[in-house]
Amino acid sequence: MRLEEVWFRYQRRGSWVLRAAEARIGPGEVAVVLGRNGVGKSTLLQLAAGGLRPARGRVVDRPAVVGWVPERFPADQPFTVAQYLTAMGRVAGLSGAEADRAARRWVDRLGLAGFRDVRLPQLSKGTAQKVGLAQALLRPPGLLVLDEPWEGLDAAARELVPEVIGEVLADGGTVLVSDHRGETVRLPTARRWTVADGTVTEQTPSEGAAMAVVELMVPATRVAAAVARLRADGHHVLRVRDHAAPPPVTRPDAGPAGAALPVEPAPVAVDGGAPADPGQAPEVAR
Image 1 (cartoon, rainbow, N blue to C red):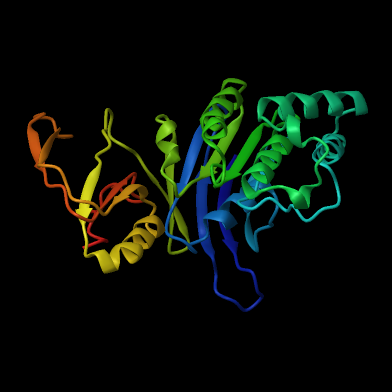
Image 2 (cartoon, rainbow, N blue to C red):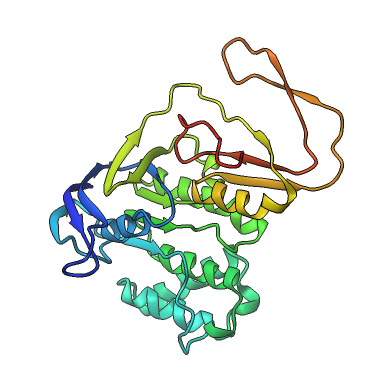
């Protein structure tokens, strides 16, 4: 699938969200879409999925079957979980019996059995997100597009997402996924697309690149702002610590020498990983 010279804006005279954006991805490949909030990651995913049409340019060779999971599942619909999934299976081209079987399979696999007869507006955000994931997989997708799929999921479901992605890839499908939680570290073979200034660029990680966990000290009054800026930049905030720190510890250096470097714990610290731009120094929380 290719995005060729894609331009897009939401209003006729509005600002361009994407300008001559180009990207290419093949069967059996997964790409993680990175970038700051508001740069057009979700727009790019919707264009790839076919939910939006480019103002200029085109999307070429999109697979016939597309599974699309938006960041927020539209739960304000008057259906039970079972009714909704069965109906979506029929929309996807399955027969009645096939839709019922597919709905039961994903209800069981995603831990939704207790919610089969619950209406969508009564679901929690995390449970509704599971329904959204299920509907995208009722028919094996040639293209699976996931916009923040881990948001609101419980631990068991979070572990399942990479497993499902692996199955789609093994079947020759293509996957696009965005994530601000740092969960895409579970996809070590993923390509990395960065959206910035209306364009899409691909980062090619060096072979054997390692991830570093960096501890940052900030004043207690600035913790909330520091965490918000880290997340906006695509970092994964592992924990926030506001108690007395233990003595300094060491960690293995991610560099080739493998030396041990001191890590100075702090009374208030934010651990960050998986930056949106791996080549950028983590100075956002100073």
